Length: 224
Image (cartoon, rainbow, N blue to C red; front, top):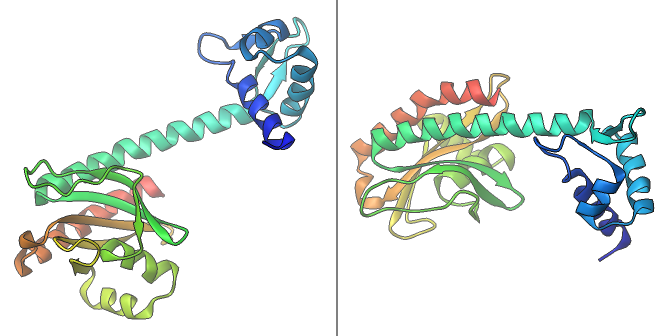
């Protein structure tokens, strides 16, 4: 492990000393918790103070979390709120269609499932959140259309308003996906339903796409 990485690890150890019960900590307390020597702690704390991740009380000499630590925590809380609202919308889609519902984004040359509600059907297409997959199937094609300039996919999407695929990644699985934009009309990701291909009749495909499109304005509110 490089010395730079070791310093970062030590900095995170120091920041990790603070929580709801321990909002302030002395040099001695930080040393006891982190097992770092005091000179190292002082040196790293100076850098953390410089970048506003820590502040030092000049009266008692104790350390507290600074503005940028609060900023990161606030952003994390905001993300949790988005996750809660996103899961609620996906649950509605799942209940209305009987299919598993997911929200996907592009990650390098793959797609990643950020949020998902799996169908409760006995025959279930189960994927855990955080899973990655190749940029194929309906959601993958949506991501390629907007992030890799795939004009043929964009033209299909313009005609239908959705992308449907069957057996493209997994031979027994089909999916319908639509693009999601925020209120600034910036592309954010792909919303889809997926399940056993036998359930994707022509009538059902149209219905699934209608449900997805009905929910896209709700997603605009939380992705803005």
